[in-house]
Amino acid sequence: MDIPAPHGAAHTFLREALTSDTDDCVPWPYGRMANGYGRIRVGEFTHNAHRLMCAWKHGPAPTDQHDAAHACGNRRCVNPRHVRWATRAENAADKIIHGTDPRGERNSSAKLTAADVIEIMDSDEPGVVLAARFGVSSPTICLIRQGVRWSHLEAA
Image (cartoon, rainbow, N blue to C red; front, side, top):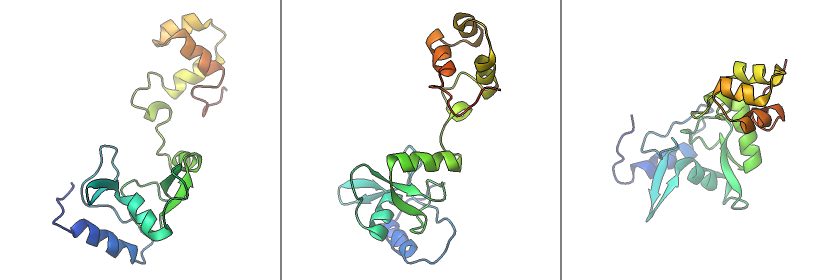
């Protein structure tokens, strides 16, 4: 449960985390954004707490295309040893490694399971037949077979 931060408590928490020597995750105990990342108000603006920590530890982002990436995969963590500047591609690759990327069945809007997709890849049936059976569109079947969708799976 998030706790309301008394005036200055969130900044104090981050400053103490900055000088901590722990290798463990340091979970943000205060407010969070809708996406689960910690939030902190600085002046008139609200920032991601881990991004502010990354800037304090490593300096400003090299470009506006850099993310504050977590080595631990824990989006609430503000341990300065766990955050670094990474390109969007590097950050996306980290999410796959950590298992935090909403691929396949972990995607809340997925209509298919991994087993369904493997069956589609292995099937010789026409796409329109498979689409009707699985409740998806024919283009979705085509994109699966081309390896564009569900590319992290391989046919048997």
